[in-house]
Length: 146
Image 1 (tube, one colour):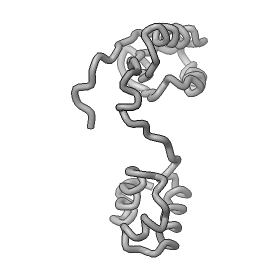
Image 2: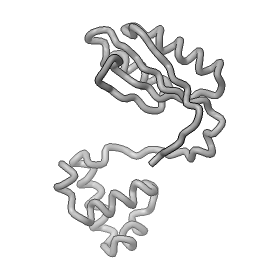
Image 3: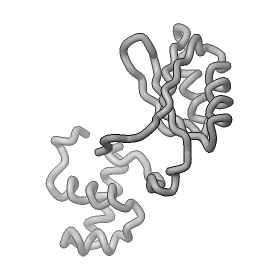
Image 4: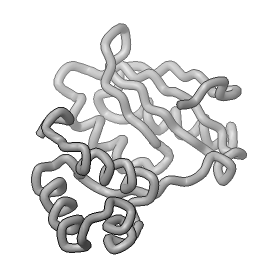
């Protein structure tokens, strides 16, 4: 289903779920001025149609302010992307993984508790079978975040 196939109520429901996916259905129904059954049906339909594919925990930046963040640019051997992606999924410090065009194949956004842990993490990623090269950029500060 494409975003254009969603009606205004679906978009409003998704906006509420983005704010807090744990909001009780009864509360969502009140906010949308719909019955609880209607809202539950819409959520189930959005899940079936893979518009909603999961729910997650969002940790406020203040709770992770002490972490050292970095972007790790990864060059992958041919036909190794899927295996490397699976290996990176198992590393908790990898927060985001982008597939990109250009001189690198992947960009991993990572967070570690110290420079030493970040150094070990970069070595761990570089040692994965199929990783040809890594280049890292430590985040000093975030100037704009939307």
